[in-house]
Length: 222
Image (cartoon, rainbow, N blue to C red; front, side, top):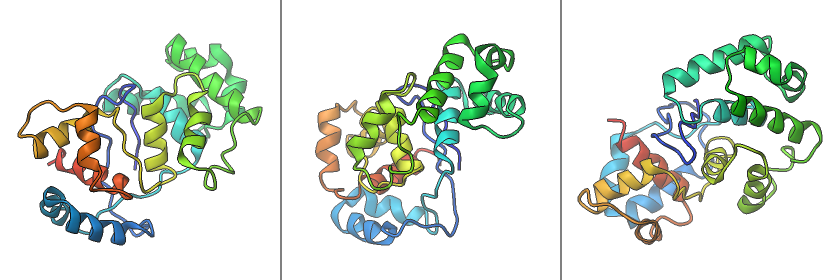
């Protein structure tokens, strides 16, 4: 499962086509709730049986990949990530990135800005300005506050991290164009929707906005 931050805020539908056994413990209860409460999801969910959100991996790697993939296509993001992997000796950690420095990251093909963002990310991890070992116990907004203090990480990337890495059950990424596009398509006959209207639709999803969002993303990948 790969998280591509193709824009900040997100410019495309995240890659959510993952089937596996590592199902979040809340998934079945969430699906039952959404099938009962939302007439649109009652139609969409059965189209994607035995497919669910899966875990993403190491927090630093997830965030580094998100930064590298910002504002470029998935194909370009994959290529940029491979170059970064090679430069890091196939092991992307805060320490390795810090040792590479600005020159090493630029030699790997990263732009000046993205190289600076990666170094700031590495510094936050190395200096313990963020607390990834505590994130599973922290509430959503506390994690978001730590993440958005890092250069290059905005609210959208933080929301994606909460969904794909921490697998929080009730994240509603209102900055995501893909979610707004799906709500427009399925709930408003294709008419543009505001964040307020999207939030109103999502009232029926709580406390499982992540799961509803995930199925709406899936509906756009047909």
